[in-house]
Length: 249
Image (cartoon, helix red, strand yellow):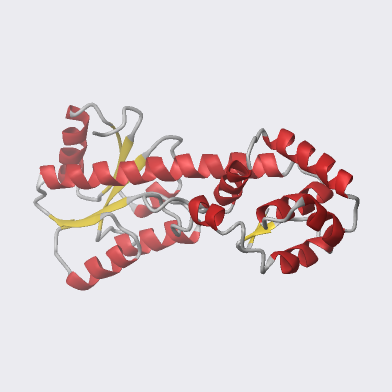
């Protein structure tokens, strides 16, 4: 089912085709906005809610593939369903390789187009939720002091407070204080929650999300393996930032 706040954008220089597609989605209660060229679409500001765009492959000012490339270049993430009056296998392959949701020849099978748009909107909604979660996780981590970041790294490395104190060069009691303050600032009550927060901040999502699938469950299992702990903390000693799988937090 298409989300209630979703919007479908249509970029097509063929007025009859554009209006027909717009009328179909409007009849389903979906908000629609149309554009007759790639240039007109590019100056349109990004939408706030889940969005999917239908793009004609051959536009007057640029090809649909060029429009897709321009969106990618400007980091404007939006699910794309391509439409074409003249099928082209090579263009279809390029579009799909670059992440298009689907590719259809006209006249359109409305049911199949609807299913593709619905899929694109679900993907966009998921991406927006993950982006918001990542932003919030990074905001919370930014509250930590440099020393709290060091203690954070020692915690996720699975070190005991005494081991952390020795490697960081502070008293064990001081480690305990920083650890308590760190967890309180982050609003967390367990190490597993801390690992999940770090996963989220660095874009690590579960297998059914859009990340690489190496989530907090695997990290939690490996917490007792301390063979790389010293290397991590030696890095931390000379830095005021925390890195998690290569992402600076």
